Image 1 (cartoon, helix red, strand yellow):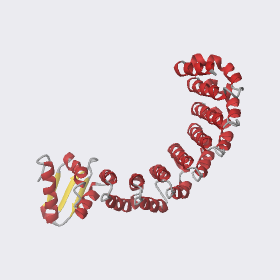
Image 2 (tube, one colour):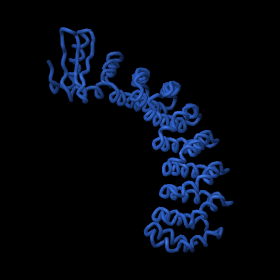
Image 3 (cartoon, rainbow, N blue to C red):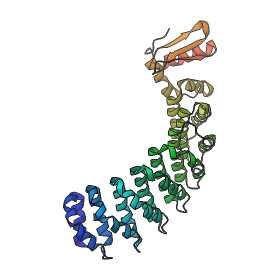
Image 4 (cartoon, helix red, strand yellow):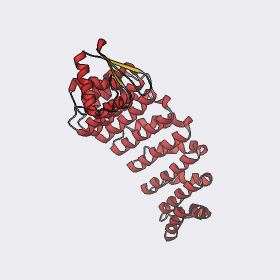
Length: 343
């Protein structure tokens, strides 16, 4: 074990040198006293020399069934490194990883899910099978396993967005999990779905609107980030999202309030102006005013209309009673001093 410990240090500093002793490590790993140390060295070798993976893959697969749960965990971590760098070997790993994701030890299950994530990212043709298991694992009795499953799902959807739509029911249920961290991870996964799915199921919006009122402030913030993506990809649902964001701008938690205002600034300056007048919330101003700092603000008194040009060069107008427009311009001018051209 002392020798293997030394080799582990060598592998960290010079993996190419440690790889010379690969055959000896494989032999040593048959000894129950050194299996874990040997696997840890193999993991380091896998990082530096992916081409060697096929030589010891069968050994790693066998070690992932070891009677000792710690050995199984280390074997799966090494398999994860193999999956990262060797797409051709992903198929050989998949069945064992799927089996290990149901292990009685929760840490083994977690390591297996993390390896499945790498398989799906490395070999997209296997993504569907990985995704099915991740969704099933999102209902695991252990909250950490559920979190790992949802985090892995989020990464897979980035690579294969076409797989997202049929997962909404599972994610919606996870967003109501008793564990607030699981709820947050579910909403972050929904955000990824919203980024890539222009025809989002309205049920997803209902889930996010409900989550925006969650008792946990971090969950509320995650819901707001997801609502921003919905508003950007599905214009017909944008108004519902903006209403929730405006409501959140009055949240008792300052971080939630600031998140809502920041998001509103990226969605619609015009809606921000409406929100300012509806709530007289001064926190709107730092988010809203830079829009008018960048481009001229013009008021046409005869039509009681204010218009400006957004950063894309599009003309945007705001129709309000003349007195309200004058008040608004006064607010803008007072806050930006004389930095905005005014007519």
